[in-house]
Length: 210
Length: 210
DNA sequence: TAACAAATCACATCATCATGTGATTGAAAT
DNA sequence: ATTTCAATCACATGATGATGTGATTTGTTA
Image (cartoon, rainbow over all chains, first blue to last red; front, side, top):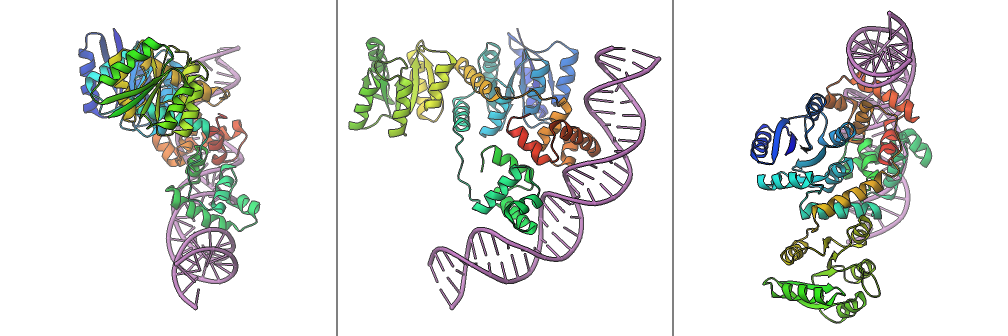
């Protein structure tokens, strides 16, 4: 008997999947909540399920953040994502955090059931398309391929300064320009990268997105 | 029509797979050789297949070595391994070299056919067991340099919020705590990491230093 | 010659961050 | 029972960041 827990904030989806899984002969699904925090509280008090189905976008802590915490305290629980996100960063972050499966939300109920069984049996369920992204992401990571960036050389200088943790004033000092020049470049950089803070710029840079 | 090539030094296996695939309505398999060298010669002279099935252990160059060379000269060819090896190093090396699929030799002929189709359609065919090894290998790789961090769970939450580009206010909202609580955690984090700005924290986190 | 892009600089306002100091509560360890 | 630690919250000040608007200079391109 495989016991399953679900963290999904969409009530209809959660209830549907819970009822379907709980009806299966070899599966029991007694806990389905809408936040990581709630699930952690439950795990502390009751017997742990064998596997967890986890969404990413949740109230409070994200599913990805939750993986790390749950795996730390309950390392025997196998976690599989069930989410709408199919961009490789979400996939990568989930798997790196400790998830062992990744399903997209259009996955049919029979396929979810089969994936739960695969997960419980030591496999890592994911579609071939997801698998392709995983391979590409890991190998891109390993190869450190820098994507094309439309930042000018000076803008790239400014980004490097941000990544080095420098304030606007220190960047201005480094390049012997005025702080208002730095600000102007920053504005252009934010526009090109579609962000609104240096934190986002730094993250994009260190993730290899510029 | 998917055209397939095979590099397999076991004559019986090679002929069996070639005949089975060539009989399929949507698949044509006109070339099956026993070494990488032979396949490369063939690719230079004739139309290239869409996908290649490749063993690892071969006379002369290994399948893994062959991947790199073939992908370099014929980047549009999709390569899938078909081998007895299921240790994670072989799997990893194959995928890193450019293979997009990995099957074990006990895979049935219908499954091989289906995998060829999946590969041609942009997926990465592999069993859940292989996928699990891929994830574990990659994440062990990435985590090898992850140092022990003395941040408390809540501090780690706060760091994750910073890395996600959130302001103190948004982090407070995410965890349903006050902004002054966030500030207090930030102060502790800066002290532990010996930094003075969120930029430095974000950089340390994304560089795997916490 | 004119247009354009990159780089530069200024002034302004409001929000956020960094830092300091002080405090309470609950759980765990001694 | 006491101490320690983690988590929480408050108030304060000065610095930094985000954003808006306006401007000049230089080199390149059409």
